[in-house]
Image (spheres, rainbow, N blue to C red):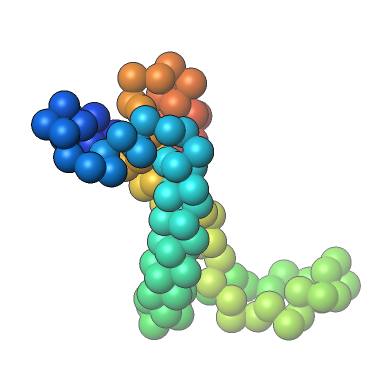
Length: 108
């Protein structure tokens, strides 16, 4: 979405808006944005899950002896990963690219 906004601003001669045409610039921004989302949103999401007592139950210690240390850990980390992927892709990607559309569809 932001790609099309800055491409429009490039027509008006706004300095720096041509940088959005480079995929390396958008990839770097997507990397930084996904790290920020996973750190900020992940921490708040884990605190929310702990407050609602949505945790993983320990099955049998004989199956996974290392899992004993994980008692009470929230088990919805995949939601954080999906949000950290989809938000930067939708904000920074060229949404007319067929591969980007296929990636969004298969992720959801």
